[in-house]
Length: 302
Image (tube, rainbow, N blue to C red; front, side, top):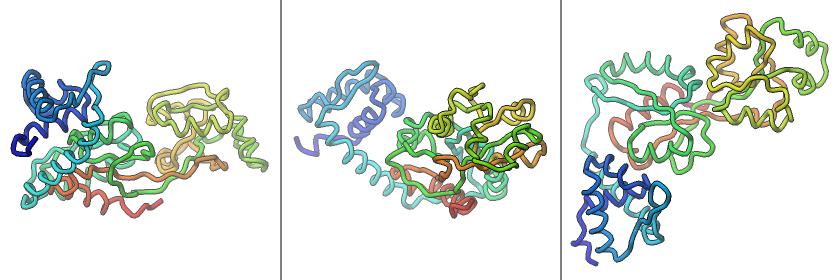
């Protein structure tokens, strides 16, 4: 085939189907009808002499030829998009932009208060929406523009640009006056003390569960919940303890009634990073927000 036979919309359709693995969702992303998407895909198959995508469960999967073309098409579309937007200008003082961010509940507590206070001064007309996503969806959502930035400790997220925002470590939070605090003050192995506790864990933060698994403390779990931010009331009202990030625990401790203990936990150290898509890296609004966040929180501070 000759490149003159292709039109840009067919390449955009190819890319959208490749990223979503679903023709209907690709049509929604491109704001076209599902029949129009199917017709475009049929035309592309004829031009390239390949099925390109075959049915797989509720969606489709790419053929080897589509996989080979996918990266080049995505890069070419990204370069074209950057070139078209190269002269665009983002003025934060007058902008009415909506920024969408991936943050967990604990990320919202850590970053949103300071971020919103600074944004309301620098860009009073912008709006922010948080969109917490499963880790497997974060990179595709950044690539297709559903979210602009992702905050977090996201070791399984691949194929994004990222910069470290802060370093943190896991500690143990208990109520002040917990009976086992006296035992610990007498000395001894910190992990032996930990094995005397009954624990609450957060389902959505798998690393804390992994720590308990490595310490063989699964049988000490009395409650598994979905959110970190319910923990202060639970810890204050019971003798349950929780493994959680030190930065967030310090905020709880400021309210009074809590004690922080730092036993030698495995996998204790971690880094919270900011993630974004290479595809949209040079878009003026997203580039401005990224620089703003890095200036506000960057430097991988503790």
